[in-house]
Structure formats: C-alpha cells, structure tokens
Image 1 (tube, rainbow, N blue to C red):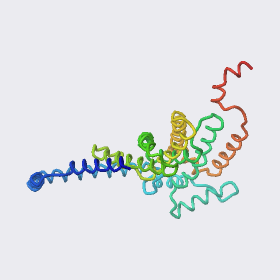
Image 2: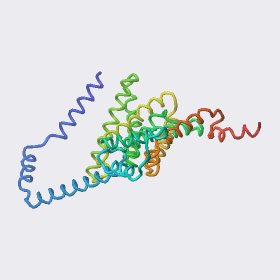
Image 3: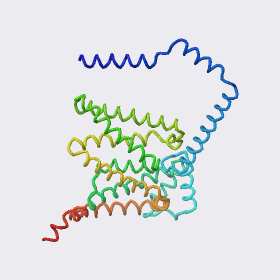
Length: 308
C-alpha cells in the first residue's frame, strides 16, 4: 500500500510539473495566437480542407471496392450482372435463383447475398485446412470472420493485427505483476490493447496516413477477437505455440479473403446458388469421411513411416 501511495504521489508531482506554466509563458502563448496573420490561418484552413477532401475520396474509392459495404457501387455491379444474365422459368433446380433475383429487385443488396453464399465456402476451406492438411487455428468461426474483415480492409487489417499482437505481448508483461484473476486480467489486457490501437490510429492521422483513417470499427473489433484467443492459448501453451497458431489462423483468413474478393467466384455463387451450396455440402461430407493422417503429420512422421 505504501508503495502504491508513493508511486501515486510521484506521478502526481511529475504531472503537475509537466503541465504547470507561468503566467508570462501563458501570456506569450496567447499573444502568438492572436498575432497570427490571416494569411497563415487561411493557408492552414486550405491544407486541412485538402487533406479532408483527399481522405473522403479515398474512403469513397474503398467503399466502391468493398464487398461488405452496402452503400458502394459493388452491389450495383452485382445487380447489373444478374440483369445481364436472365434465367428461365421457375423449376425444381432454380427456386433459389428466382428468390434471390426477386429479393434484389425489392432492395436487398446483392453483395450481402454473395457474402452469405461465400461464407459456407470459406468455413469449408478452413475445415479442410485443419482436418486434412493439419493447420492449427482458433476454431472455424474466427478465421472465417477474419476473412471477411480482410476482404473489407485489405492489408490494413493485417497491420492492425500486428499492432494488436504486439500490444497484447506488452500488456501481458505489464499486467502480469498485478496478479489478477483470469477474467479481470483479460479485461485489463483488452483495455491496454484498445488504448494502444487508439493511439496508433491517432498517430497515423498526425503523419498523414490517410489509408488508416478509412478503417471501419467493426473489422478492428473483429481483429481484436484474436486477443482473447491468443491469451487463452498462452495459458496452456508456450508463447511460441500461441504465435504459431495465430499465424496459421491469419494465413487461412488471408486465403479466404482472396477467395471472397475474386469477382469470378462472386458472380458464380450469385448466378448458381443451388449448385454452389450443394457442392460445399458434398465437400464437407468428403472431408468428414477422411480418417487418415493429416498431410503435415505425414511430413513430421515421415521417418517412422519409412521404417515401417
């Protein structure tokens, strides 16, 4: 308790010393502000307006290319693609095609339908990578959601991931000395991670990194989901193992994002939804029937297999 009180007093004293200004310094500062020329003020306002216009233009271009954004031109392109490829009369093999076209005509964004049709494909890819290839990861749902986040923001989300992981490592070393139980410790770690990510985004605005300013909050929060899984993994594994699992999760997520952003696949699932859903279901059944060694396990135990 004495150490905490002493640390608090020292910090308070340092804060007061750092923030205290003499009356003369304050007067000089006010004089400089009021003596600033109108031309300098106009120049500053012009530069701010130019930077704001540039950021808005980049945001608009990003929205036009983002498949997750319902206000961009992406949904219009997909709707136009449906109009350019009419289908026949209603039959047993195309009821979903007719339902989708009617829903799009009633105002449902076509890109939302594409994402819902692609999501099972991404989860099947993750299941194949884990069950057959032998990659590790944070379940199936988190890599799939990360794929959508990567598809939305591109490599910028990867930069945020690196920041989050570094912040988690720093926060763990800081919070470890507090000796908190699991749930308060996890909440404290997320507090530190949120603060560091916020400071990073603020710093990016100072250095004119306009691309980071177009990030949406939801991909950032999705990326921060990794934090809790990363912390939980370290409870039962080493930090090296936790980093390995995180890296393989991100690897599968990047591959999933690449598939989501492929325009040919988007158009295929929108034009043939029944065929794509049935194909994904068959692939899942075949993957579930596989009972042999995973490919990475065969490489790992190659010497033992050769001896037998």
